[in-house]
View 1: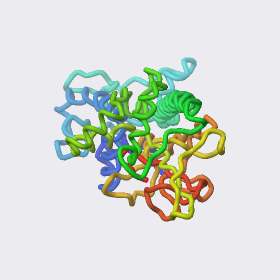
View 2: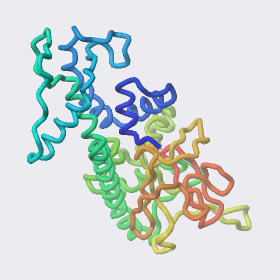
View 3: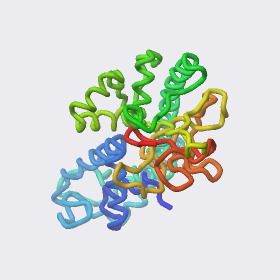
Length: 339
């Protein structure tokens, strides 16, 4: 299977099929850093414009400016690579005697350089792939560090509330996931360096609202209230709690500190929206490679799938984005989610 770095090169050369082209364009929209890499590759090709006199034509996949390679190009290219990589090997052979170029350009043609660059990339196992993986790992680690900072606030909050973490309710204003962030802010337990965006998507300091302010706004301007609360947790999802049966039907419960260290309380938000819950994939925060999950015990793990055992962390056992049906039925919902 081709790596995304291979596809980026193919996309630039317009050598991929329509479906791959579409996949790459979607990837570029979600990963600005990949767009920068693509522009760097495109910049490398710009010198070919100077050789327009030898062009194959604008209808060629590389467009005007591509040279017709000489028959011995591959020999000269490999020799050039050997000369650069192994100083004790013979120098690259000179151009064949009597060969003339009407443009007066040196025998080491730009097309030679392009082929050599391609060979070096393949021989080295695609340097861009390694750099891309290192960047991805850095973003995952930065996200984990941010979730750990949130956890420190959750710990302090639980100390102030007999071990309880912020929880949702059946009735406003705490009937949406985003209000749990406001509860932490009202308690003054979040550090100033906490972001509600996964660092892979850029840092964003949470907005400053009190529970009272938002509750009043809900009464006066419900649409503005809805727009605010649906983005409070930004790129993250928080526990929607769970229900347990009692004599009145059921009782809504939140998570408690020390209840079970392996229960998730937060994670990168799921891939679906308010109007579409059908996406079965991983969070978009890390290019669908997986999601960071924060557990009650304080540990943060990067999971390559969205299930723990058989439990989908983004849906309850009825396949709904609502509170769990029991304590072990984890549901982590984005800001707009209701229990």
